[in-house]
Amino acid sequence: MIMKTNKYRLWMPLAASMALLGLGCGKKFLNKTPQGSLTQAQIENTAGVQALLNGAYAAMYQEGAGNTALGGGNAWEASPSNWIYGSVAGGDSHKGSSISDQPPIVPIANAQEVSSNGFFNDKWISLYEGVDRCNNVLATLKISPSISSADAIEFAAEAHFLRGHFYFELRRYFHMVPWIDETTTDYNQPNDADIYPKIEADFTSAMDSLPATQPNVGQCNKWAAMCYLAKVYIYEQKWAQAKALYDQIIPSSYGGTGTGGETSNGLSYGLTDRFEDNFDASVKNNKESVFDVQMVANDGTLSIAHANGGDMLNFPYNSPFRCCGFFQPSVDLANSYRTDANGLPYVTTYNSHGIANDEGLTSAQPFTPDAGNIDPRLDWTVARRGIPVHDWGLHPGYNWIRDQASAGPYSNKKNLYWQASAGTYSDQSTWAPGSAINLHVIRFADVLLMAAEAEAQLGNYAQAETYVNDVRNRAANPANILYQYKSNSNPTGGFSTTPAAHYVISPYPSGYFTASTALPAIYFERKLELACEGHRFFDLARWGIAAQTMNAYYSFEGKITGDLSTGNFTANKNEYFPIPSNQISLSNGKLKQNTGYN
Image (cartoon, rainbow, N blue to C red; front, top):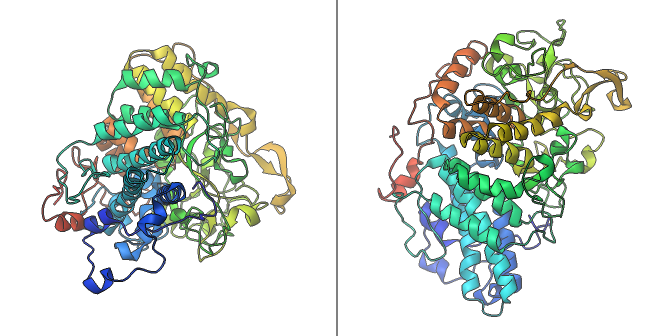
């Protein structure tokens, strides 16, 4: 990720990954030097450790799942966007495509997971691959005396940040997981201790040692580490500790108490005027980008591994994007963007104020888009019939949906590139497209809403309201109005001055947030702002409302689509995914399964 051309891209023979995956080597293999491998002398220096660190950054793409030597499957099974495990499992999206395509996703969508589902094993593999690469950096630093003190501190800090990220993902996915670090010699460790304290230590170490800015935009910096540590505190419900960090991170112009943080490329944290700028490769790495997985198209590799390869299935079907009709926003999500006469959301009754859609209609049958009040973020998140899809034309509905009866009438929009810049920011090297749109691990709107949550939990409702209204005021900026084309027959000809829908959105009135209203409003704002970004399942789980929310979703959405017929979320079980059965077998029983799973 530091070097976009991946000049130093390595696939090291990783001891921990081999142990976790049960890989073995015969004597004849061990007596030969594998082609393309490096000797210890070649890596025990500044250039060698930099190469190892670049390899750790490259693990953010989570390509490990696609490496058959490690037992992995397809790239989408471990996509760093978490579109399957965060969005589909959380109900803001359907699997999409047809019910029979990629069937292992269906039980995940229905909270009917089993430990033998290979998708979980692939995610486990890819995350521990990342851990191991970070450990290699830290272990090599200890035996590389020629590296300067300053370089050693920087390398170690970045490795701790990245390892913290991989372990945070493992912790929120699988709950109790084994901790393996650069000092571990027996890699068959039990999962009998909570690793959150060690994750905190990794991010604290990174925060204390990293500089405020970096020479390469993709590198983590001090402020990204602070934001990630605060996020860990939020997951642990350590509200006061999180608030103390957010007070430093959030600029006074957004209601914070300090000067605020900055991006690795030296931009003061803030919200972009245009919500859509967070999903447009031409303006990426802006002031809202706290830490991103850096995507690049047409990098000369003739693959899309570094061009959102994990999301290669997630484009409208039978459209100019070619493939493949997966990852369709739910009707429940679209309905959430309805606003009342005051421009506020229907936090608890949104499905009683549903937005008109073309479910059950072919593209040849007439349909009129909804004329009621709508939050403009809907049309930058959900592609729906009769509304412009960037500069590609009006969404035709049925003709771009592979199986409407299975997954509903909508397409995802946040991952779509523009036609005018497709030659630069899309990658057509393989059978499905890639794109140069970065994946946000943390963006500033996410920071503001987590800070609001901490403030509300501490009883500081006015401050929580300020942070939420920062997000809503950005959405209300006229720059976020989507306009119709000057000519529907020539969408590349530009946009008119006629809004594509009736957009009405306002901040919450002063004093609206109270002990009873604050948290529901914050939770709902996260649903609206961060939809289809892989957050929803993990938010519902940590809030303790996953069972009631998901079962209500199954009851409502299951009457519309055919893919949720077995949906039933069991409390105190489905908040975490099962430990992969393959990993339990390889551990000879040291790994213990999560509650409720076999």
